Length: 230
Image: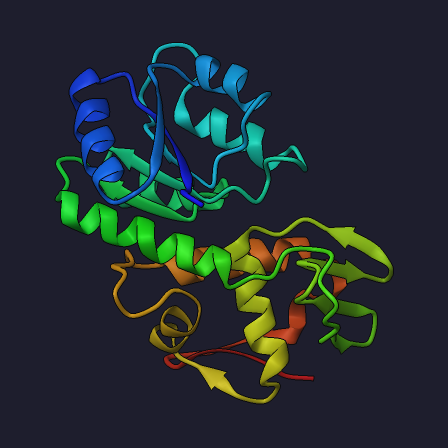
C-alpha cells in the first residue's frame, strides 16, 4: 500500500516539485499552504510522514510540530523539517521539538527522497501494537516493549519519538557497550542518511528528560559516545 505524505509549505513551487517527485517514487501526496489547513485534514487522514516548512503565516512549523507531539494520535508521525532557516540553532530547535530530520533550502531532490525513504524504512522497522511477539527489554522499573512500541517507567507510559525509542532500544539491547555517534546513526537510521552535527546529542538529551530518575543510566563517555551502564 502506498505511503501518504503531507507536504506543508506556503511556497507553491516547492509543493509542485515535491508532489511530482514523491508521486514518481510511489507515494500519495497531500499538499497544504498552511499548518491550519493541514490540521483540518489530519482529523480525517493520519499520514505516514510529514514534510514541514517553518516560516509560514499563522501557525509556524515549530508550533505545528509541538502540537503534533503533544497529541497521542499524531505523536509518532515522522516529521522532516524543510526550511530556509539554516543556522545550527534552528536545526537543533527543530529536533528538540520532536522533528526526526531537518533539510535546508535550497535542497537536492535526490537527497530529500533518499531521506524520506530511509525514515519510512526506519518507521516500518518498529512493529505495530497488537503483534504476538514479546521481546521486552527492562532495567528495574524501566520496561521497553518493541512489539508494542511502548516504554513504561514504574508502570507509567512515556511518550517517545521513534528516534528516541530506537536509541533507548539499542542501549537496552546491548548493555555495557559504548556506541559512537556514527554507530548509533548506522544502527537506527542507516548509513545512507545525512545527519547534521549534534543530531544524536539532541535526541539523547530529549530522551534523558523523559526518563525521569532513570536518565542517568545513559552514560556519556567523553570523546567516545554513549552507552547504557548500571
